[in-house]
Length: 119
Image (cartoon, rainbow, N blue to C red; front, top):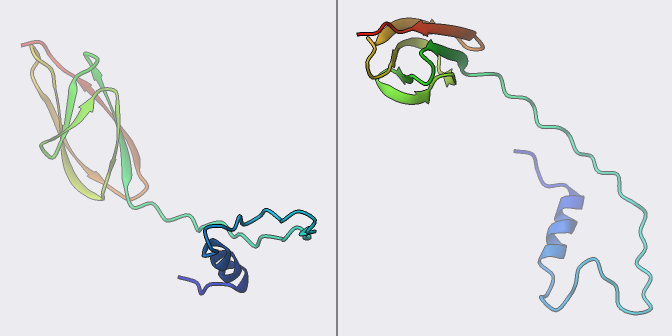
């Protein structure tokens, strides 16, 4: 965490002003015009990805997707997963469940096409 700048301290003190004051508004006759301040805003660094993405599609459409035994919704689904081995299961009433194990790596973008067969 970076130390508080002088400008930030000034803004914080304005927030702590008494309730009857109206920060940013002047009393009648006062001239409070100030030159615009250049804000030294730096964009936050983009964090490195820590997951991989798996897009799951199926025939028939709207089949339920399970990853490691947990329901993740219905197809088509886009799922972010941590790195490692994961077990996928796609199922729908009246069809034989479809299963597959995959190893996910950080930053990977994979697609699974599950075709379920009628029972």
